[in-house]
Every structure is written in structure tokens, then in C-alpha cells.
Image 1 (cartoon, rainbow, N blue to C red):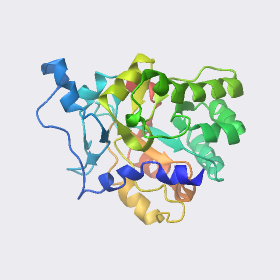
Image 2 (cartoon, rainbow, N blue to C red):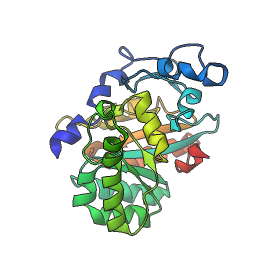
Image 3 (cartoon, helix red, strand yellow):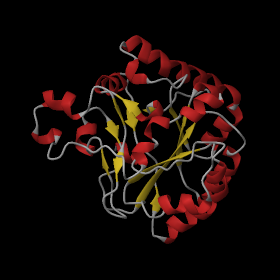
Image 4 (cartoon, rainbow, N blue to C red):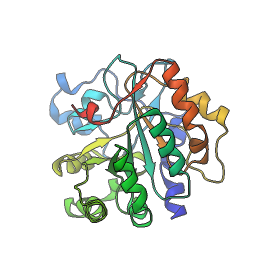
Length: 271
């Protein structure tokens, strides 16, 4: 499933660069706007993008925390507390997840792994280990499509329910209803569909280009983004396929801890 993994968030790679970002419409908030404006605030189909105006501060996204909350969606926690919510997208397994799990266990850091159907099919033991270690497993869809092109609730639901069914078969448990849109592509109707299915949707407020298997960033390149752009309430997106992430995670967690950050599960964002 290499082609699928390499496409993960490909559409957002340019958006993560400061010179080519999308920003939210200024001055709007669901709290003081007509709800009918939601369609204009959350574009019919859009790529999640971030702008980092100031080091150490929460970036600006396509939509604000308040706007996203209307559809049970999130990209960061609205807090000044130095807390990190660590997440991984898991499109397939290439041998790097065990080292990631080992580092998380060493630091007692809870994480959420957003898995696709292929990962569940090929790596059920790792899924079980994630649960045994206290992590959460979320839904990244069955086949990693552009979900914004799906117009019916039935087709949208099928992409999520197939993951739920296999997860239940593997673990004997119901999946936590956390959803991450493939490639960060979303639409207002998608967010509403997910909400209607009881899902919380999670974007991110910090990521870097770590998903090209044949062009992995160096440790220095990774730290340049992940240390300077960390901020209170950050939802961090990393890829479990990244050999760089597997190599640096222990040190990265230590460095964040030295910056007085602590780690909490995504359930704290929802609550």
C-alpha cells in the first residue's frame, strides 16, 4: 500500500510551508455569527492548512477552534497550558511502529493512532499492543480516499464502518469514534456526516513533511520544525511509517519534556 501511504497528506505538504498557507477568514466566530455562515467559513472542499505567525504560539488554521467545534471537529486545544496531544497516522506498517511504541512506553506518553484498513489487516498484533499500552486507535478510513468527493452518508459511513468492523474483530472492543480525514481534505458536509455518526474529527496544529519514505528528513530538519513550532494545546501529527520519527522520538519527547510540556490523550480535547 505504498502508493496510498505516499499520498497521505500529499495535498497538504505545500500548506505546511510558511510561504504557501491557507488562513482562516479573519474576524468570524460561530459564537457571534449566523450558523448559516458555516458553509462559507468551512469551504465546500478544502485542504487543512496552517500559518505560523509567531514561534511558540498556536498557528492559524483554515477555520478557528470555535468554528470547527460546531461540527465536533478540532485542530488544537484552546489552552495556555503546556500540553501536547500526540497523534500518528498509520497507513501501513514498514517496521517503524515498534520503536515508536517503545519510546512512548518509556516516557509514559499516551498517543492516538489513526489507522486505515490496510494497517488493521496486516498488523493486528501491533493494534493490540497499542491498546495494551494505553493508546487510542482512531479511524483514518478503510481505503484512504478523498472523502470530500463522497456525497452520500451511506458511502461515507461505509469507509468508517469497515474499519470499525475489523477493529472489533481484532480487539473485541468498539472503536473510539475519532476520525481524521485522509490527506487533510474535508468539506463542511463531511464534517457533518462524521458528527452524525458520532465521530469527533481531528486535524492538527503541528506536522512536518515526514511521509515520503524515500526522502526522509534528517534529525536536524525534524527538530527545526517540531521544537520551534510546538505550542500549548498542540495536536501533533506524525507518521508511524517515518524512519526518522522512529529514530528521534525518544529524544524528541525528552526535549519537549525539558521545555516543560506534558502529554495528554485526545479525550481531554473533546472534554
